[in-house]
Image 1 (spheres, one colour):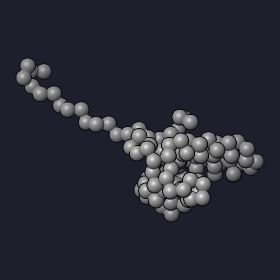
Image 2 (cartoon, one colour; image 1 turned 120 degrees about the vertical axis):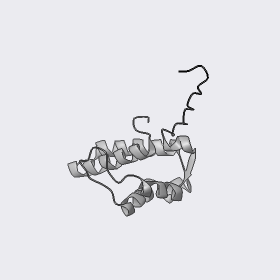
Image 3 (tube, rainbow, N blue to C red; image 1 turned 30 degrees about the vertical axis):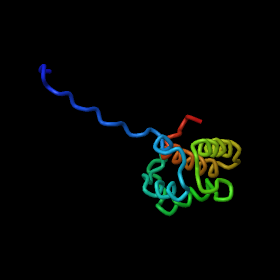
Image 4 (cartoon, rainbow, N blue to C red; image 1 turned 180 degrees about the vertical axis):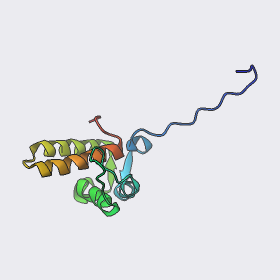
Length: 116
C-alpha cells in the first residue's frame, strides 16, 4: 500500500437474525417477510413451500389469539422450542417429518437456529 492511498471502507454487515433488525415484528410484516423468503426447505432435497403456504405458516405457528399483533424474539424462540418438543412427541414418521421441515424452515428464516 502506498503511503497516501486511502483504505476501502468496510461495508456494514447484514443482521444475522431477523430480530437483530427489529426487536418485534407485526404479524403482517412477518407474513410478508416469509412470503418473500426462499421457498426451499433446508435439508429436504429440493422440497419447497409455496408462497400461500409460507404465509399460512405464520398464521398457524403464531396464532392471533395467543400472540396478539407483535411477535418478539422471545416468543419466536419459545415457539421453536415447542415445535421441537412436538416433533419428538409425535408418533408417526410422516408427522415428525412435517414438523421437522417446518422447524428447520423457520430456524433458517428467523436466524434463530440452535440458539434457543
